[in-house]
Length: 357
Image (cartoon, rainbow, N blue to C red):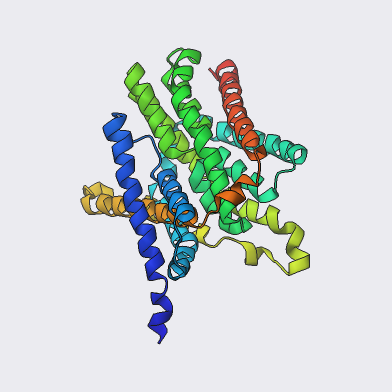
């Protein structure tokens, strides 16, 4: 029967959803109840992958779950990435996009150059370098998850890269708000641009902006940091196809690849969601748009659920022994990437202050 072919994925999908639910609960307990934030600064996706790694390594996962976990890592992941596009409104970014976009571009190019030089010296696998690069420069875990399918990264490489980005992202989240206030002398625009361009994860940027707001009474900094980060997130549209081409270009002749065969078509869905958001805002928000706003929030929530389920599935399939065998070198690259993006962000903002203000 045809339906039986599809039913085999159900147990694994349910298991991934259960881990999503657990991670959401732990996130609220840790971030809201224990740490006292209104919104947890800890990524639910990070907790999901850690839970997955724990259960996957200390308990035997039945084979009947495997096809559903594979389905979650591939198709549910891509569905989550497509849904991400609904939160982006690029036409609203034009107010300070003239500052943010060049800043983000310079940070991305600088980190890519530095990581490329380090990779040659430390002999890190190419796929790992790509994952750390895009995670450091674009949008952390989400960028890693979006890039992994197009460069055929292994489950262990994905987990290692996510752990790398999460560690240094949390360090940045905790330290940078205080540094930004000190360095930029309380200027909300420059502090917000720095936080939005130098911290990896969207949730970490929001948390850093919230810390800044609560400590220094500057809601403007929170808004600017968040919008800068969302502009940065849109570079996924460019970076994913670019990495797909760069990674596969040496194999195109040998394995018969073409641009069409390696192009990540789910990116078109991501772009389609951005267009849908902007068209919908123009049509429906003029009349109040309550139903439209509820639709947007529903798709946003779906994206979070889908991506977190994919994280859990990856965690369940991750072998800690294999990660240990990868060595410490990628963490050196992650630290240097964090340091580089922070320094370049400061230098670029300083140049803007000197020549354009």
